[in-house]
Length: 625
Image 1 (tube, rainbow, N blue to C red):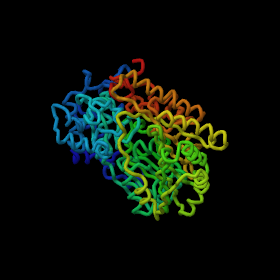
Image 2: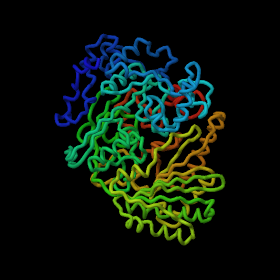
Image 3: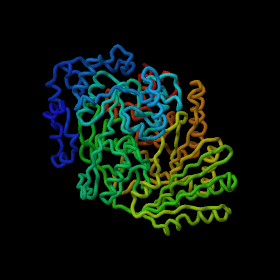
Image 4: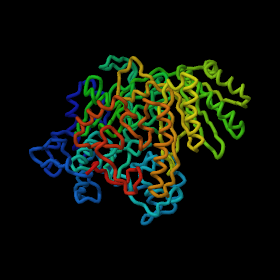
């Protein structure tokens, strides 16, 4: 079938400038075309047609009158013959995967104790889930219907919020075929890259999932010439490239890329499409700021390029408008920058050793220096954890790109002097690195998957909160109250300004005035009743986070690490950009092929969760349907 499809390659690419088409990866040159679909038998043509391709031959699917997306319990669910036809039209018959939860080996009828024990030992390792076609790193949004019993015993194993089938994308034609199939049969469609997601956007009950994880090609350009006027180094990377792969590749070419701190994050997926903060953000801004072009498959099924001169509205929207919403990105071309040295410092503060009064004074002293730190173009990752009656603050790392140890000591000198004045024993670990890559490797450990009992929320704290003593005191009081209520903080001190050389994009404008992105969370017992779980979620959203919102009026939250129940999410995630974003969404996805909870244009649908809590374990239905 791959050879058969190859005969119909790249008709759409003829519409793209010749020089640009030369940068397509091999998997992007294998495309589904309207001509090819028109040559198919009628049954297959109906299944795989582009949107509105055959209005004169087939009755249009009446999705506007349908209350829910078709799921495996519906009479309209595609028959086995249709799935076989889909399998036969993919670039490899192995690319259609029936979803089987990994932990099914722990339950009847496929129980295998040895395999279950091995899986349980590796369950918290990110790679256990990232390299699987269906698993995700925030399992609460799947519904916890099939976890190893020692992790969470659900009693049996059901599909829950997992998709029904997965298309392993090894060619653009696979993605086009999957989109057309899902749209024409009114199936829910989701996209998974790595599943490194805090909001459940990579799962969905009974959906057809497109898995982009294996699209890992990369290409380096010494002097890329872009239509925008940019001339300089650039990288083109496939949708499945992860941070550890990108940073290694960039290092081999003497450059740095603006990407995430997490090793396993799929950079070209939801990370970049949602904006993407980075250890380099205080110098270069957000990851999306540096994009020169996307290759993308749209809801219509077309493969196209979006850049500064082609499909410009889509280009703008993809830079911050969120993943799983406007199409499936197959590759991204972006600016990179000369490599640089990095100096880092790590330290801990333990209230059980220094006393709570000194702990709070020392912690506030660091937050008070938020503006000084980011104006020095540094970044810090500070975890503060309640432990019983005490608190532990872990700074790992304070990351200073393009700074020597001497320069870093000057930046942190006033803070260190404060600790000395407080008579706090202090042994910071300072390390100098000649280049970025070894610094990133050493300072950011592999992140484990999320627990079965945690829900996260976040807020962007603006510069204005840290200008006056009153602002600093009021802001820190709210954060301290959060910690004293038993909730942790992960505080990212950075200032992702938009460089004058980069054009405007869809990223939340609140990022441009922020100096802190702070995450917290609540522990919720998944064994408790839905009412109890909803009350705990409400306490997080309407209690803790309301206090955060009240102290940061007019700011927002980072959509990739936000509260699943974020109120006024349109303004919180995108601010004034939302109106334009939703207009683009409605114009290009009239059939609502792509949907994620609290994504652009998602207001008309909701998941009818079977267990009554916020997750993807239930059909996707129209609001009021």
